[in-house]
Amino acid sequence: MTTINKNPALDGMYWDTTNKVADKNNGALTQSDFFALLTQQLAYQDPTKPVDNDQMIAQMTNFTTADGIGKLNENFSSLAQSMTSNQALQASSLVGRSVLTKSDQIVFTGDSLARGTIELEKPASSLRVMIENEKGELIQSFSMQNPSMGRNTFIWDGSYLPSGESSVDSVDGQLAERVRAGTYKLKVEASYNDGTTASLPANVYTPVGSVSMNSNGQGILLNLLGLGAVKLGDVLEVSYT
Image 1 (tube, rainbow, N blue to C red):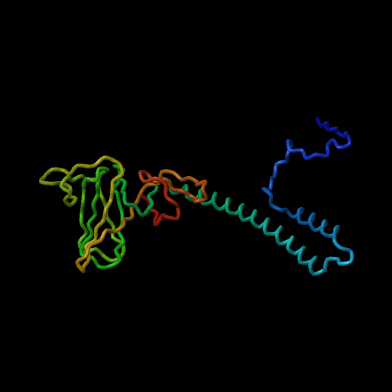
Image 2: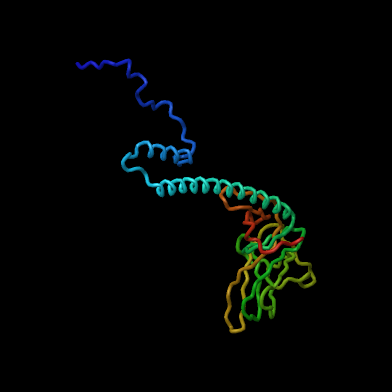
């Protein structure tokens, strides 16, 4: 059997793997690290072939540049956080107001009219707006004859007509019913002057319920009633109502 004799003089000269110091900079070199490397380079250089002055100046310049870039990144990070906070403060003023965003759904609050817009890029004879419930059943439709190029606005008062006929205050002398407050599907079909038809996207006005700051780097989010969260940059227009 082999016996290993421990030499007391060697105590404490082994790598201690139990009490490692946490690496706070994730392995990134700091300015002090660069200067430590430079010092070691000077200490171990060949006396007969010293480092050229131009090389020394170039290395010092690189060290200074690296440190400046690090500080610039820190300043930009601080500036970005400050701008995000300012945007959140400004966006908070939108709570309670309506914003115009692209959507295939429309919200009827029961207290106010549901409004939207349709952008027409070429001449059309008519635009047909169709509103459906969650089952895909048509509950209302109305047409715009000879719509204009550009923006066309439509309004829905929440009236419910099972036949899908044009919205009126009464049908055969009976008042049209009103749907319950909620979110409904929205479709738009254009009939162009050349005889073709096409489905068009719509923009709708929706009340802002709250504002939140996204933690995934997506900036400010507006939480719209019935439609969920949208980016502040996706807002096309702000309305007082």
